[in-house]
Amino acid sequence: MKIKTLSRSYEEVCAIKKPEHIKPMKPSRALRMLVKLLSVPDLNDVGFSYETDHMERAGDGPWLILMNHSSFLDLEIASRMIPMPYNIVCTSDGLVGKEMLMRRLGCIPTQKFVTDVSLISDLKYAVSVNKTSVLMYPEASYSFDGRATRLPRKMGVLFKALKVPVVMITTYGSFARDPLYNNLQKRKVRVSAKMECLLTPEEIKNTSVADIDAILDKAFSFDYFKWQEENHVRIAENFRADGLNRILYKCPHCLSEGNTEGSGITFRCRSCGAEYVMDEYGKLVPSENTGTGGFSHIPGWYEWERECVREELRNGTYCLDTDVKIGMIVDYKALYMVGSGKLHHDLNGFTLTGCDGKLEYKQGPKKCYSCYSDYFWYEIGDVICIGDKDRLYYCFPDKKDVVAKTRIATEEIYRL
Image (cartoon, rainbow, N blue to C red; front, side):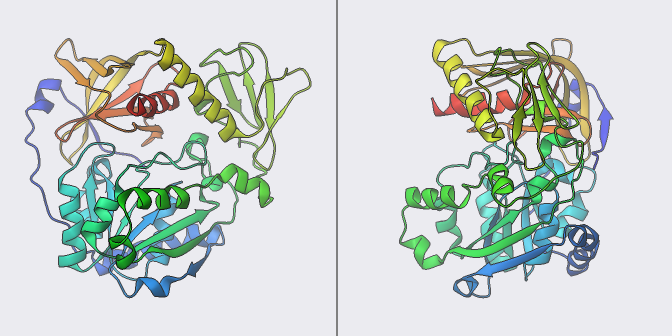
């Protein structure tokens, strides 16, 4: 999938009028049926099946439907499983170049990891006026390492405002088929899902916001590499380690960063020569000449990188400095490429400068609990997105494999 891009000057883009807010539209029945039809080949290809649990507790709807986010297949899974019309909370860039089509499909645009006070009113409008369910991906971004992306706190405030049952859809195999780091290369994996009623309106009313957060944390406590190993899900493709350096950017043997490389079925450090084979069940097997101190479990390696970032923050050494190409989204017509600049990140937050000195944007450390970052975004490149409700800046770093660390650092700085 690609996005419409236009080259414009920074001044031209800043002069573009912000689009007026539009209330959620009822999903077009014809478009819903078309999506279902177009999803059939992919779902048949993965032998898709699903089960339900305690759904009698949810009634006939409308529902607030939460779903974990692993790959584009998630939307096709939802079209098969959800039995009634539903609006979809989606990122605003999903409407670029096709706004009215996506709105008629039921999309409610919002900005990832940016405070959007209109979103709750939009969701209330959908369930109370449109009488439609709402599909939401609370992680707001694809999983990097097969575990949940950090969830926002106080989701119970939203649940209590909507006063509808909360339903959870959990997928199995969607991440293994098409992990974000693997350059959109699909593997042959069977995919299934489970739908269950997580909370009824009465339970939401009688449960504290903090306890609702705990319930959500438990519902999103999956580990898909562990699932793959325990369920003997075999991935035989010879490209399964391609791009693994995007998430495993730091070598535990020599501690260098940006020198790892995943290619074929091999993962290695170019700096010290440590080498692993990614086996057919998602584990990393070290070669004979690789020393001790490595990891066989990919999420364990990723968690170690998080601990290293915490240590850098504690001793004040964390810093990102990279040249970037800059795109901006201010409406739904295009991604406007406005030039180049520099992105800086430290304990004080983000600073983006560029466009021949015309652009200077600062974003404090309390602004976002996480960072919208992605790999091979719309087939352009790895991206780090910052911004506010008026302008989003899509930064494509020249420096290799900094996206995962930037997301980790943003989350840990926010926690501090």
